[in-house]
Image 1: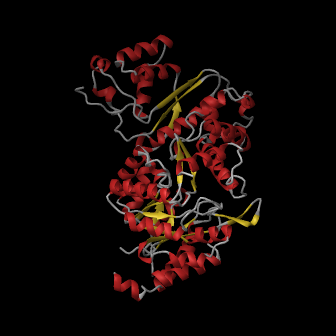
Image 2: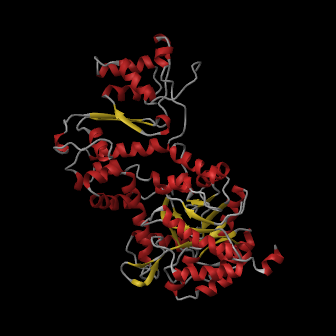
Image 3: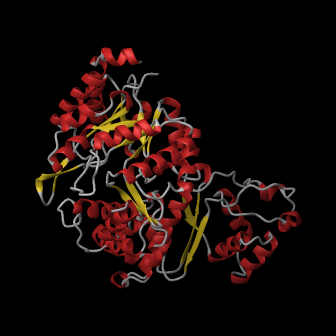
Length: 282
Length: 251
């Protein structure tokens, strides 16, 4: 089954999601929310999996750390993958663990040669444990980091080349980061290796409550912006259709509102043609 | 700077006001706010009866202190906050509500029951199908989802049920509740979390079972605290609510 546009699954939408019959629909969840020993939460996901392809989008492996991934967490992820056989598995180019503590955020990685080696090692550990390639997402950026030695598209391309992992391109993150750091979002998207892109994310952002529009926050609490839709079309024109997720985490509208937004992405995906050059390589 | 040093400095600046080249930038507040908000939101979500009783502002203020003392140690925030009830018991601003920690423990019991391992419950017909002397020699283990608690000072279960919307608020308010101790049994029969009243002796009986006592010994311990206890009725409730895991009769 070809994945078209999907939705991030919210517990409030579970009943509506179970009744939808949209063509090519799939759902994405954070595996951390389903790492339970048993009970109704696990059973809900099993029911949904019986009807739709699932994507596991991890936030807790801390791949951008100097430490290796937590073995207990990786074991739980492997067990979920074995049970749910997800169509897609992804994580972030970020860190969230320090000592014994887990921070509920995607903290930035200085893009140095040393960090690249650590991330490659960590991605390989995960891929070996799961027996499959995963996709890596670049988080939104809010800081100028003097330690960076490599630009982000080159860092991601090298990560893919060394480990065989794919990329999850979050077009909203590209827009937010480019706005906050004064970069060119279109040039960023143009520099990403097309064949490596496994999945695309689309989401909304908002202005920082204190600093205003000078600093955009990757808040996932608004519809996808017009600028992000335009960048998405540009990416599709270059690389062809890829499974695309509408992410919404806050100020949640009704399921049907998200399905409309998802329909916009699905229509753009249906209209996107596989570029001739990519077909030759396929 | 090594990746290790970068992470160490970043982590320190998240929790303290140390000024570094990164934390001096306005965007650093995004990380500080996201980390703190994520932890506090998790506590608010995981302790709904506490929020309903004392208000979200009060819980957020308490949570902000607790998060700094005990940040999450797992990325599964659904299960964050195991120590929040103990924290509330020693948090002076909520000292006026001495029953609040017991209500928080019931919220925690609900969470733990919700995510506990699956296991078949002991057959509700056990009493009818097993001779008393055989039954007395058996050791029944509490089900993985079973939790129990006795609060001697206040009607903790009633307060919890009213503030989780499981029973209506009395017309005359919470202060009109009969003010005596209450116990609560949290279980997950048919994969749905249920919370029911449990006498103090029931808690004693389950404590003994959890420690591996035979049923005869557990009953003796329960009768020691409540000589007039209706053991048959208590046992029927425990079995119906799925408090025991099924065990191999030959074991």
